[in-house]
Amino acid sequence: MTLPLLAMVQDAQPTIVPADTAWMLTSTALVLLMTPALAFFYGGLVRSKNSLNTMMMSFVALGAVGVTWALVAYSEAFAEGNGFLGSFQNAFLNGVGVEPKGTIPHVLFMAFQGTFAIITAALISGAIVERMRFGPYVAFLCIWTIVVYGPVAHWVWGGGWLGKLGTLDFAGGTVVHINAGISALVAASVLGARKDYARQAILPHNVPFTLLGAGLLWFGWFGFNGGSALAANGSAALAFVNTFLAPMATLMVWVGLDSFRTGHATAVGGATGIVVGLVAITPAAGFVSPLGALTLGAIAAFPSYFAIVLRSRTRLDDSLDVFAGHGIGGLTGALLTGVFALKAWGGTDGLLGGNPSQLGIQAIAAFASMAYAGIMTFVILKLLALVAPLRVATPLEGLGLDVTQHGEEAYSSGEGSILVLPEVEVPAPAPKLTPQPVAR
Amino acid sequence: MKLIIAIIRPDRLNNVLEALYHAEVRGLTVSRVMGHGGETERVENYRGTTVKLGLQEKVRLEIGVSDSFVDITTRAILGSARSGEVGDGKVFVLDVEQVHRIRTGERDEAAVTPAVPEPV
Image (tube, rainbow over all chains, first blue to last red):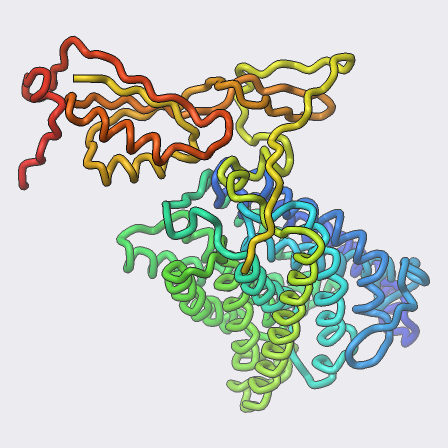
């Protein structure tokens, strides 16, 4: 068995390697699980009257972004094109079959990358929960995937200008986290704060959900980072182990900071610390030593922790701290990749390897994608607002988005409800309040 | 003394508590209740089953006050609980025969006068 396999690997012609294919099939499923995990992470952090809406904001990305990816965005990101945009030769999955792409089937590569697009778009929802109308949100997801995610993925991974510049982004610190983080920040400020924000306490309704979500995210992240080697090899193992180590260090530092500042090691803090650690190691996963990953994870706790503390004192209602967690965490990770990356471990030498210019390249990539994603998110939302109001009317916000957007409740006792039989005329749906555009 | 019972919308509770605080009304009991005030019934769907929700979630406040505080309290509630839609709720004012404060054994007017916590 081994001999023919070795022969295949050594063959210069691109061939499909079964081991790589098996690992990438697994990884794709692992990364897809991260979006439902995110739904639990976010869903636990909101009030019960908005919990279904918040979870659906993640779940709907599986459909909306997934379809957009297959039809247009995959080609835009990964088909051969110029430095800024791929061509449309793979649009509608044209020419995406079981032929090799690297050492795995092309169609599997497309699906693996698709799971990244889905979670990236879903991440943004955390900044705009408890107030955005569901229809415009779904439209935003689709447009954002085409206008922002596709091009930025092409710049870094699809043969675009940032990749050619030598940017190190193993699994998406720039493409996924900085991209989603800055878009979330812009979306939160375009939509404005929730009506109760800074007026009354808005507490998480189910912290165990948040812990469950953080745990499942970590599990899925082994596919996210380990799979980004696109093979079952040493690089995948390194990325896997770094994904194992870095969040451990972040968790301990985060819990320490929490205890020091508030006297308690909070569960929400622990869950957040894990996610920040995962975000930070993402760009570095296959380029740094395991000890480097521990150090990187420990350092990464500080900027995000204090960004959350500062944000809660402002009027900016980035409700679930997507910018502090993913934007700042991603930026920290991207820059520290330029510090800790080592040639011996599979990367280009960074600052500690005696190559300070790598840090500059990392900064260029981070700030270029921040500027692009920020501006485009602003434009998309402003244009959408011309067609339909983005926010629910204030009284409906009071009633909760589960009832008004989905006609369901997360925790319904069912007491006092009347079964409407099919032959009986269905009463007109309440409430009839029309949403009003918010002047901002 | 009077007992004031108010049935209000859950999402107005914070407003009402704030208004009562500013009106210096202290001491109340809050409970979550189900009720119906003539508002349009909400329709929900669960996997093909359509359900009409006859009862809505409401919040019930009970406040025991001395006679001079009745107007102040009702005005505070009326001003803060109103949204203008059907289903805003009701305020009931009831006569009370006796009130006892359990801790001190005080009766009636003395028992509904807010206690000033002793400095620790």
